[in-house]
Image (cartoon, helix red, strand yellow):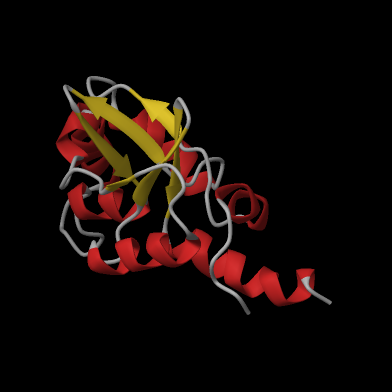
Amino acid sequence: MDIVMSQRTAMKAGALVEPRRADPAAAIETIARALRSGEAELFLVEHGTRRYLLDRTDLDRISPSPASSLARYETAERIARLRIGHALGPAAVELPEGATLEEVTSAVALAGWRPVLVRDGARWLAASPATLLRAMMAAPAAHR
């Protein structure tokens, strides 16, 4: 399989997705519900001049451990006090327009398997290990 494909082809294959936008001052519950239900996979947060991508691993990182002695209502209360800005990790790696799928995959690997942003004109697309894997699994079926 030729891994060098255009952004349009990569988007059709599911390797690049358009993340939903989120405000860093909003409550974490607004994105937690969407991420846990599968309604959204990635959120783009623009904080100043930096861009961040949030996924489920970021929620797991800031959520209280399920093994803690907190009661269910205490856990919910603590999460309700958190804002999206509390979940921000390192800024997302940004790739220029025209990046090949091979370059995107390499960037995801070099970023510690964190999602990366790819410029597409005036908008940003995102690639995560999950979207890349889905695209690679679907690619052989598309060439039959």
